[in-house]
Image (cartoon, rainbow, N blue to C red; front, top):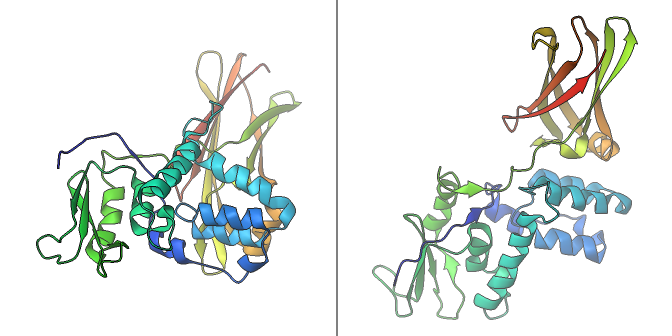
Length: 300
């Protein structure tokens, strides 16, 4: 079969690829229909931590959670369209046209899952009468040089991803040439500066809890946020600097309580030199190992 090369995006958060597709919670039975539909549709990309928090939220907070869920994954937040979301649901529709199996919609099949997460394969070989060591109907999809093998073991039209292929998923996710859209959206935060007295000002940084990625450790949600503040004068000379790490270890109840609020950092700055000044703020979530920066120009 002719090999057709294409550009495709890969959704990260695949460490829980098979577990998240099957995971359920005793709380899910009490959800309203729109919340149930949301959890069902995002089963391939929602993290265990996000699922846990969503299930514990009161109904009034779920709409805000869903809004932030998609914002986190928007690769171009400056544009009105969320390309990640559009691409995700486009692929769901594609799989429902291509891979419906007896009693199962295409997006819920093994072929549908792989298509939704990795996109159209570079090439696809179909062997309705078996191939090599596979005596049953088989499909082999290639992403770069890595094959994904689906076998219809009962000749029922239901193709299952073979175990070795499932183990390749993590390797495929980390190929350096593969683009990922999951973490493309920058962590958003607010910065302000207020004069206290001559030579002194209060710097305030507000970071929404909804913007913070946490790692679930037993019954705690944990990460560490590091902040670096620098002030330069009009000659681009650094006149003041501050650096500190803020560890987080929240229970589920504490995380629920703070959902929709900001984590506020207040620091008193000593300012000298010639106006105008530039305040540079760098935040890093140590869990993501990525830095996010904002600058504020001010007179003093």
